[in-house]
Amino acid sequence: MDNKFLTILTAPQNFFIGIEERPVSLGIPAVIVLLMGIVSAISAYIVTGVTMQVLPASSQQMIGIIQGIGAISAIIVVLVMWFIMAGIFYLISMAFNGTGDFKRVLEVTGYGYIPSLIGSIISLPLMFQYLSTIHLPSIADPTLMQSAMTGMMKTPSMAVISLIGIVFLLWSANIWIFGVREARHLTTRNAVITVGIPVLVSVLFSIYGLIA
Image (cartoon, rainbow, N blue to C red; front, side, top):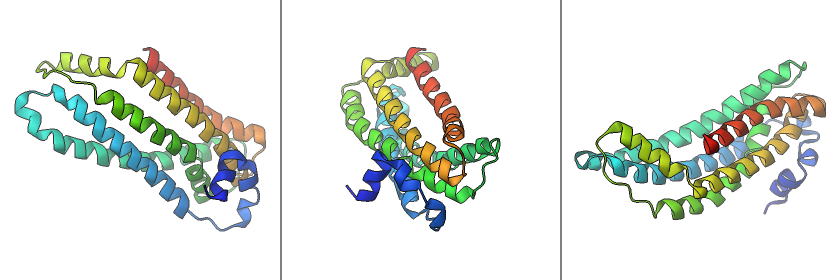
């Protein structure tokens, strides 16, 4: 693994120190996020293919189209979420009189997605292995259709995948704390609050999805 990425993962405080003296570069962060989008697209393609088994036989020919739309949408969502997460960090840090360009926040946020990318790659074969064993009957009733898909997602296998996502999200949060601290010239305490609020909401949402 490149020494730069190893430093980001294991000692982000060292990687981001002095970052304001370097020109903003969104190239590598964009590639990181795009790779995560591609992994998410593959996951969406697989999940959509399985869940669409419940469609009536007359609609089965649309599965390929729906899978394609799902995959493309997944990439777009990941890219948009990159901007949204950076925007949230930027806005919350304003409460602590943070200074620094939004592009810089976007840059450090992109780097912070490396653990989440790793988590997604680990989860992908687990998801494929689980979903490859699922065979849903064709259902015409929309209510029963929703019930079947919900039941498919509420299993120990999917719980493990969700927990993997939470663990790697927390790892990303650790990187974001140091990145946002330097990008917005915050104290460590204020950087923890800035990053912690949206991450906590995301974690609670994931936990709710597991137990609801």
